Image (cartoon, rainbow, N blue to C red; front, top):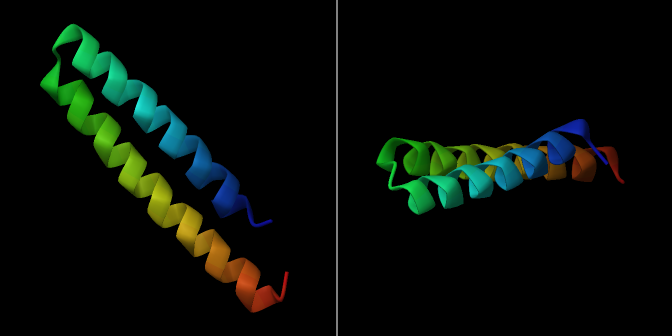
Length: 57
């Protein structure tokens, strides 16, 4: 498994937490940062998946 997949998955989780906290406290900026972290994590996870595929794993 490529390290990008691990890091990407961690960013998705971090983003979900930030988004939930932002919603809970009414902080739109924190909520949008959480959403952005999730998107970034999903992209990084996809890149890691492509690298794994190219390596044949």
